[in-house]
Image (cartoon, rainbow over all chains, first blue to last red; front, side):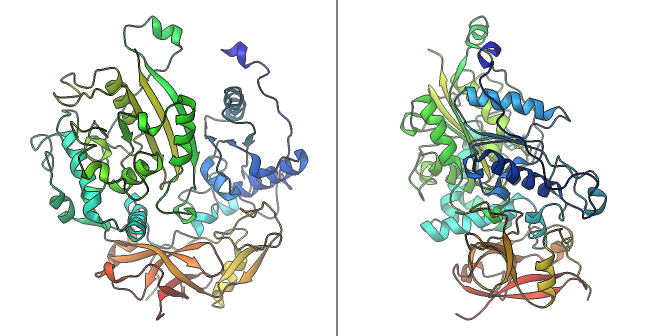
Length: 403
Length: 138
């Protein structure tokens, strides 16, 4: 593979921020980035709007948001000073693969100014800070805390626009719990395992404690402990292994914003774009998907995602759960492990999605440890969609079982 | 009573906003090339990528885009819960976050998306006056 990559891409320009060194007027890391990028655009004649891949050691989605671009390849590899050389490697691979054409690799670090204006240099533009990040500066006064405080605004807007109700979304929590009762490893598997475990009703979801109206606690995922890993290999290596391969038929990524303040449409995510890329790569469409694993940080996240990736029309995502299609035995099983809502969610739920996708398509989802009878589906195709940040970033995969 | 909620540190390029706020003015960044207002303040216009930006005094008027009621809050806001947060569509374009005033957190169904709002400023300290939005009669 590495031979194939040789000369697969070239560096076509290089520029710096307007002023560098020991600056009298303190600057933020973000400003240093933006000036360098603007100068690079002027130098090369490549409009910033044409950049379709962004690589940085910082919180890359905030960098993109500040620029007002929504690239289809986003990389925040941050492993020290050599990160940028790695970015070149990753960018070359992405270009060679035909995913992107124009990669921006950017660096801004206010090692000197940080003593005056704060900010943690290049690895963060100001998350948790303020002065280093204008989006944080302009939102930190207003009492938003954990994830539910932001996501609730999306549910309200969805209800306003489509006439949906909290009861509609409560079905998602109920059905996802039904799946968890088939997974002995799920935190909410049973009452014996957890005092609040075992089956729940729509009424119980509606009547549980309000966290951020209109969301009660059962509309929200848990925060637990989880570790997981997967292995990806070449077909040649896969052929020699005793485990079954599950093929990555399609992959796509995108972002809408970093801070919810910049969320243009509160009822939509970038999953429409990441899914389109994944489906196109796979030569398959939503109608071909026999299983869906959707990041369900909240019931509203799953509902909107189902709409964005084409499993249901806009405003009707919840019907997949409400009419039983997503439930055990249904025509389109969703979140068969019990989801972030009832299986496990440690903070970043992307890995459990991959693990369950592998188990289902390799026929190992009902091994008695990770699944009781009824959990293994007959699906041969699966769409996985992860959502990051505040409905900010999305990655979609299309997996296909081995024949 | 002293202001006890988190107070934003003033950024390097946002001074005109905070200076305006002290005089009760809602200052907004506008691009001199494409004429569009953006929020939050940028180093570069997020619409046309010009760096020729200026500050204008906004009308201080807008409408509710969406909202939520925070029942579980942290730090000094915890004592305030429940309270209403909202995203405001500015008359000049783009959007701001606020803790919404002039509404009853116990009756969230009565809050109207699209309701007209006006800005007001609260002095958190001598240098930092924070804008909040209040629902007004349509």
